[in-house]
Length: 291
Length: 329
Image 1 (cartoon, each protein chain N blue to C red):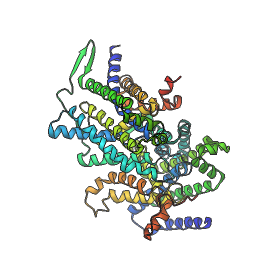
Image 2: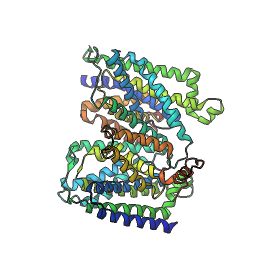
Image 3: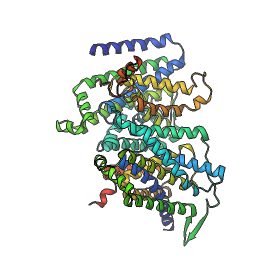
Image 4: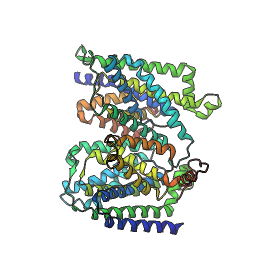
């Protein structure tokens, strides 16, 4: 029983960070109707930024939260403006060329990083990296707890932005109906760029939060792209609340899988859930609440 | 038009049949064999995506299943891996039906991503089901021939069969149904075309040929592991690129794209045959990624699809808008 609760705790903590990363993809999905297959790779770039800041300036990873996500925001806006947006004007037989473009962007990001930093495993060893404390029989990992708390905080900030500010409302309007939003005077092009930038920034924040716990190498992005994609589908494409639950479900499922089935099959658990959801619940968790 | 296409086909076939007799180097033969294999994969991807409009990010499934069917013939059944050439296609077709059953209930980008996810599941299964697939260790068999010539003609035969069948299919009633589904699925349904049925048919043919290519790869290379044959980037995405660079939705697009892509990859991998500095070969994956971006941005309809545009550029006339190349069926 203790082991079960411990597993659950670990799953929920990591799930909070997953939810943050998945939320970024969900936002992009909601507004642009595409899955951003460069998502994990953008996160990986942010992690390397944090790593460089730590190694050369001795900057604590948590302070990098003020640098890496804004940097990725700018990168995201630039990618949307110069690479993804122009594709809308190209008439191609293959309609989903924006998705394909994100695949290319992801590859270029990974390979550029590999070119600069090589494939070595890197990690940021802070004084608190392996700190834990006990509440009753359950042990709590300090950086995981920090990551979870900060992820919740950032998520709350995002919801405040989406629900209360004018720009946030424009984002939601564009997601609901782009044409109508444009008729009402919303600059949909800018909102789309903003959304992609925001999505990249959320992935960056998630990556930075994970850095004190995770090893870092150029290929770390791919699995996280898949994870956020699973979360997006699990939550119901484009549903932000759904994505939060999706993230938690994925975190807990992976954690349970790692404890009770096999550590190696941890990643397969997510995929199996994904296929099951597609077959039995194509609308994702969102559909359950609307009954 | 019809006659010209046939003539070009026969001419090319004759040209390729003569090539290995003229060119003695095994290295160049190898490159052409690999390119011919990609003609098969690219053309089958094109049937499903370029003609039927169902963009698959998971063709590695069929390639991998084909390759593993051949490999398992030797490791588990103790018979020659050549039986895989018979078994690989049907096995891939079965996995194609499975993929279709899961994914065809989705449309557009949801479909793309579902195929990607199912492909990941297959890759993970291949890694962890060690009793059947030997896991990450991969399968190693002893290849039958030391000479490249038999493989060359086999690959040529496969490529010719594949391109010919697909062009025949596209001239039949099926072909028109496929294009109707690509252009407007709802309209096609309204006209009484069962989109699920015809998408599945398209997928079956597509997966069959890709599976054959996989079985061929096993027999030719003699070694496979899950990361190679189920690779997202170097099989699934490469298949998309081959068709896109050449021109999706055209018969001759994927064959052109296959040769362009394989040659480009080989150029980078060998640092332009040793003429460029060594670091160029390290950047071959980077070049691959850049090529994806450039191709989508500037040649959305590929060499064949955007051919009029390229000719116009050549003549220094006013460039035509992208996509004005028209669609050849």
